[in-house]
Length: 173
Image (cartoon, rainbow, N blue to C red):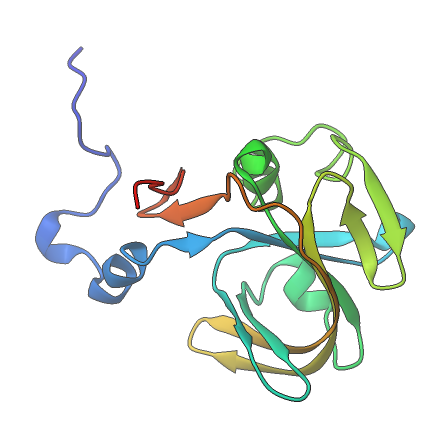
């Protein structure tokens, strides 16, 4: 058996999707969007999002339309948008459906129920939002939300996603 450094399932160099490769080179902050209560709680790891200034300020996310979160959101629904830290990387994988989550992804950590949905107790930065619009955009569901409230905590070890991996930010300034 020989161990190779390249990914065993990667498409050959000439057959790779250029848009996907370009997107992979954009470092993105990893977020977690949650909504619902009790047995109706759903969440999804989201790194394709942005905050738009204005009155009201907006939070825009691109979600998998086939995800539980994507299928459950309608105009008027409320969501909690968390910015994850390095310590949350396993949780991010669980909500992305890429790592086992015995008992479900909400079972492994502490949550506080808010009117907008479950809030991760260990997340220092989070916002509550109200969905104002949704539409299919390419292969994603664009979800536009008005920003209702934001709590901004320390930002010491943000969880970033780049080229298919979680990375720590380069702190050299």
